[in-house]
Image 1 (cartoon, helix red, strand yellow):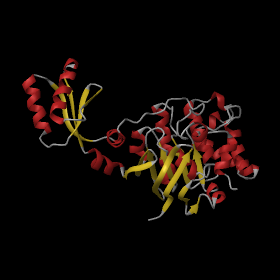
Image 2 (cartoon, helix red, strand yellow; image 1 turned 90 degrees about the vertical axis):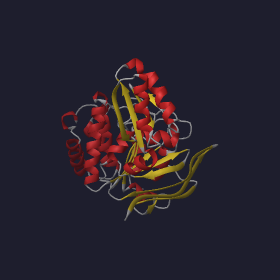
Image 3 (tube, rainbow, N blue to C red; image 1 turned 180 degrees about the vertical axis):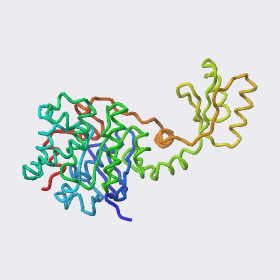
Image 4 (cartoon, rainbow, N blue to C red; image 1 turned 60 degrees about the vertical axis):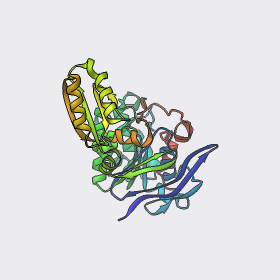
Length: 347
């Protein structure tokens, strides 16, 4: 088995904040590695180290077998980077943005124009290619941003919350594009706060919290081993929901909670289902749905970190500050075109 991305004992500190505290991870070649964690966990710091935008304080990171510190220039020639916010010039057209990136990467003008046209067609932006980017929708900007990261034909992609602020339809479009890139042989490291995104796209998942890896495995393995089974109960009458919650909490102990119009609880005892059924009958609570199901990735995340994932809001217009270097100046991977060029161009 070959690994396109690896880290061993990766550490980074910002003043008094320990952003990474000995992170080990590996992404298999031709796969998607989902890097999950709460806001401020260290995800963006790790991405910036892999992309050669930050130097680790300790440990070692390699991309395609090349050390990100000693061989930074070579690493930059192999990667594409898409950050949390679109790194495109609003006053340029779609074509001009991609042509600019191509020229910064040293492509001859004719080749840069051909590559721009190819990518605009691939990302369904040809009709808008001559318009200023400030007239694009949020989804169109993100597609253009991803296209910009591919101008240099990278074999490894770093996607740091690439669908932040997008509507579900636009997210779905980017999912399809990422699947196609991986099917063509690319490797991707994806950070996201949308756990269904990781569930759908990631072959393997690493969860970090407070700068440390706290779990890793395939989505199915994590849902099976960490989450286990979940009881879900939906009463017929909405007014019975609080009583149903109390009943399940008494039978299941900690972990019972109300979500929408249902009560959920982790199944730790095989007798939980029959116990709940008997008590529902005893209390006269009519049930619309009562099921046992496998945990969702959201529930796994809650079990591991103690709280739910919190997708960031925003329209992709600029970075938001973060407390530990995972936002603002330390973590805003979008930046301007010079930042993009630094991240993807050969030294």
